[in-house]
Length: 129
Picture (cartoon, rainbow, N blue to C red):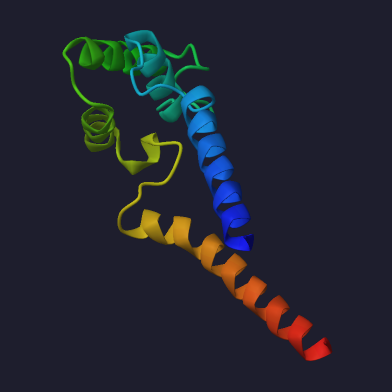
């Protein structure tokens, strides 16, 4: 009978996961305006220090915003748009590091450090017990 209870708990957890993923997670069907807004916030202002293209009113930021709007209207994907901007302005145009090459290292190092710390804490806790 215990296995039946375990199956019920698993089924309830699975249903809850499905409900949360459907209700809470955003839809993949973004509007053009939300895509443009997201891309403008993901790109740095070429002339400003520490501001996104969405936050700045500099001439170069306005040009980047127009370029993003034009590319979205042409039906280009977010990856294509960011790639075009990166090719034109360099990798520093992106506010978050890329997920290839050195950028991948920037994403992996903190995760690996946390994993090593957790293993170390586990070993220390086992020795104390």
